[in-house]
Image (tube, rainbow, N blue to C red):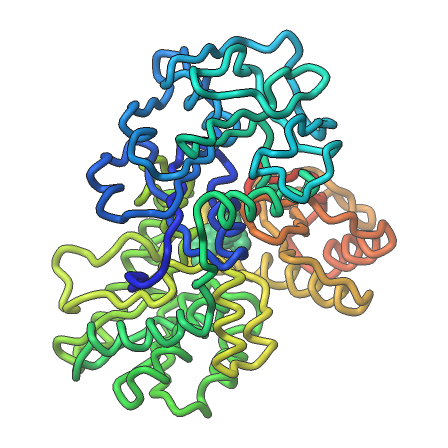
Length: 511
Ligand code: XMP
């Protein structure tokens, strides 16, 4: 997306799990943000000319051999910098301070005192506050020019600053909700230190995106993979607005959708003023996936097959563009900005080498999910589509652990349907909830007979960012009904378990 007229804050990633949260918080403060690898060259940073830089946390110790480091020049560019957690330690270490292991490590919420109300970060904040800490090292001696400006019972330097050089750092995490007034602190950094104007907003994004799409596409045709999820639906809406008459939406039914979902998607889009094509590719995908159990392989196969089906379907549109609803977290998690792969999202791999498409259009590539939803609402999309819970591109393939067969998918579909139906009946809704068919079988007893069938997992999570989550506390009565209905009505399941793991350490999906 063209952001040439927007002020930008760069978030330099040193392996911190909250890098996206930092970038989102910055955008919530109406300042454009971009995540880059911690070792991004200084020249590249100068070209971006950010108004500020934020150094993320990370799991390392600055003294460990393989820990990511930075260079002194970063701090000599005259750009305001805020170091967070490891970012603070890195700032101290690089500029000649001293970092040491804590006598007492701090994990969780900790009461902190802001000692110096003149420090711009603390402007208008209460001096005693709750912060989220997660560290085993601390800054024992601040570098020359700095002063310590906050402390906790176990950490004498919970924040430091060198106002002359506009360098600031906090040991705690201002980006998480559990740090009270954390967003206010970030806002202070942006507006009182970096001189932010607050020039980033969603209406501008729509306008810029429409202009960018028109420039990129010209008179060519565009083919979009429409899954019916939030991202591809919003993508369709913005493309329809930008290049009316040039858009064909292809819904590839890969046979791994939830129960009845294919028909629902067809009903939702068929009437719209876009060329909607449904392709029944179930046999083809299941054929490719036969015998494959390794999660990353499944994702790769599905991703590649997707593009191939599009190519075939769009062969009548020679020289067309492929549009995708890729969003920023897909890009970041796939390591394309940072180098570390968590999961390869099926829609980020780019075009295969021998493709007939002439390019990719990804209007949402730089947007977070909440921004995509806001965009959808502005574009007038139906609320049921905009607020739909996420469904992974590879579909039930990543919820069907082990081998994928039609029979196993049908078991999963029926169980998942019952689960969703009972939650709806109970008036319960969570940010994401679904069933997972495991590849484990256990012994059961039904009537007088012994059974030996699959274990089915139920997952329901509360999250606002999908980067972290807590498991939902579903009432036992509801779990009772779901479990007994599934075991009684779905042949092939003999046991139901409920997943009580948060993210981290687990992920939301099981694969
Ligand atoms: P994890 O399992 O990584 O999931 O905690 C985070 C969110 O991303 C969704 N997800 C995907 N979405 N393509 C997508 O478009 C994918 O390959 C994919 N894998 C996971 C997941 O459902 C959750 O909302």
